[in-house]
Image (tube, rainbow, N blue to C red; front, side, top):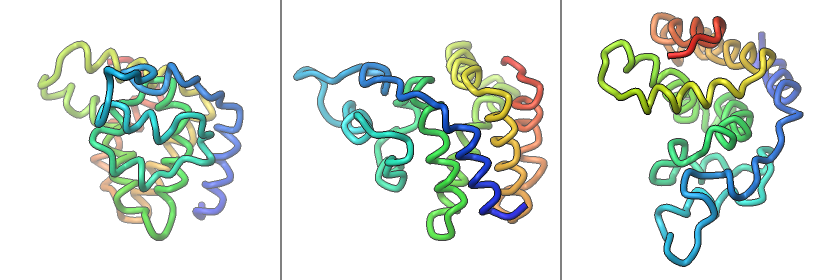
Length: 168
């Protein structure tokens, strides 16, 4: 499959995503006077923006941009990250980031380094993806392998978890 087809599939799978609301963008909620940088950095960047308007490169320069997102915001902005990961200019760094945050928890769970809270958060994020979205996530990971950006043995456990809707 070529990248243009994959981009179309990403858009089709995520087109019905609903903006989570300003109060559900980050774990910090809506920043007030008591919450300042860096805690509201991600919030300020994404507030009111559709996933189609997400400034991915600027977002990824943040302190902890993906961990700052609530499960709803992670789900909502995932298509922007997926599309950017297939871009000829930014693909390497974004693809690595997408792979890391889709597979980070399953890999560390095997080694027992992180607590139940991290597994719970991962499960909350992944539970929001529809079957069609899960299939697109798998296709993107497989595309990374085909392009030589990731090794199959590195992404296969994640593909299996996504495909089987396993909870950790």
